[in-house]
Length: 164
View (tube, rainbow, N blue to C red):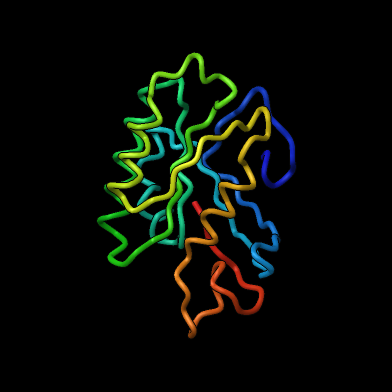
């Protein structure tokens, strides 16, 4: 919500999924992002395979003040690895950077997880609007250049990038 509507939702009511389309220009290239926002609830585990199958890139968010949310990334990362045989752009986001003094997951630990999974890493705050746009820029800029496909940040014409 912070990225697409520049609004912070203080009381978040997790749904199964919310879909957004957002046009951006990154590195002088227009791109239409097709974003599927899932809350990652355990009771929606059966939908994860479909979500992963349909997406080209992933923004995996955990709360830096909630170790369990960080540990839950492993199930998503395992699923992505099992379903995507080629490189897939990913950004691991430590949210709640405005609460760094309460963090339970070190940046070193998160950076190591990102490195082990060939992902980018960034610390952000949806509340403060810190590094929210930069998260999506990192993702788009990590898209491989494919001359046959007008996708991602690899140049070319306006395209749709599907993101979970």
